[in-house]
Image (cartoon, rainbow, N blue to C red; front, side, top):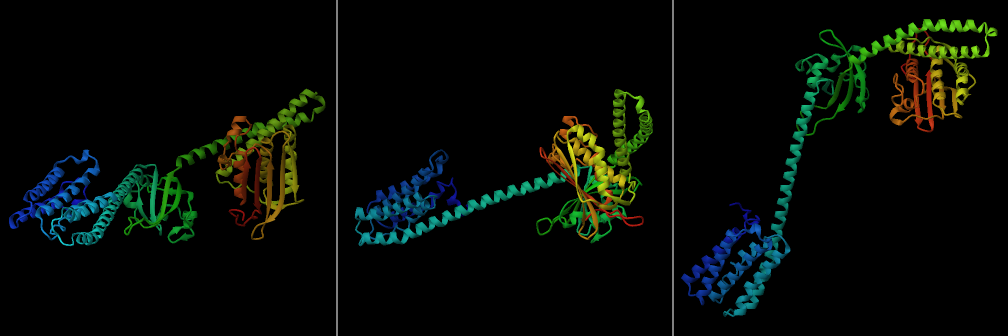
Length: 558
């Protein structure tokens, strides 16, 4: 039997075994070796103790109140007192025997148990005094014995209570740890299952030097290589050489980007598979911290998540080819229409007012269509990588004023005023035609999305970047409907139109801002949009000088 058997809740009868054995043995010894004063009382004490033990062992204590269990040690104390009285000796021979039921009760939880045990012990000590069996200094002995034993009983209760509490805490901690360990195992198994079933996304885990240490099934499919071929290979071997220059260790800085500084890098890889197939992959790179534990399964490094976007590239190329073809095909009839409009203008004296109005409508519509065709063609050409910028000395203010004047009839028709301010002249090396497209689209959008009576402000200023190089700052602000925050990052995507634009059926195809963004990026500049629904939108464009022939083009303005 375990040493903790006294502390078990169902050990009601077993806790009475030591006291019963002690009382019965003492009763037998007294009856055989001595002549007890009251043999019947001695036998009664033994019988009472045995009855208590049997009742404790056979009783269904799960159905009875817990406080009833405290009655058994109290009855055992009565049996000890009867044994002491029945023996009738002048010396306290059974005080030590009384400790068994006293301690049995004291180890029960709760303050009432220790109080009852002390009361019972006092009862055992005082019964011989009350019955007066001839002991000398009986009261003094009883008091001294109680003062000695009482602290021991209280100490036993406190120690056992603390031990039981700690045992419960340890058991709860063990159970919680088992649950947490099972949850970790379940999470690990779930994650492993997800990674194994993710056949359309490739997961590559590398160490800090860029050597691949773990792959999933999707990586084998995306990169066209087996796991055995990928493991141990530097990740830089999977991409073109021009994407891994400026290395950080053996991992290309261009591959890591912001991930090298603890952020997240999103980019595209041009990958040539072993069978000669070319694929375009969208790659998300994040730093991977070390796993917890003394023996982590994987060292710290980086996680590369690859998604095959070859189909999207092919669709985009087909779309660009179609747009370019349609734009070219539309230019010829448009040129004819505008040519005949110019011929009819030569005969204005022979046109009545109604015919003149019809001619104005035709001319405005043809010019609007020509602008759309030019934007479509420019967008397709720049998407294909064509360099359409022709550097020349330009006065940005002159270009802006020319565009504003061309937009004034549309602005007046919409009841919107357009104002230009800033510096008198802003010289810049730029492409006047592409610069005009940028300003035209920004002013056109500002007018289009302004309410009647609104104002559009165009500000042009000359600035210098941190290195002292000059640049032009064009700001176009309106008091229009504004753009929702969740749509602001998408408005520069080609053919994207906001919810409000679609609901209000505002004319347009969603090409203007995407074209502006492409031209600005190619120019090495930056475009920043800020907007608040119901208040208006502000667009800031910073353009540096274009390099002249033979000079390297900057990637972005400072």
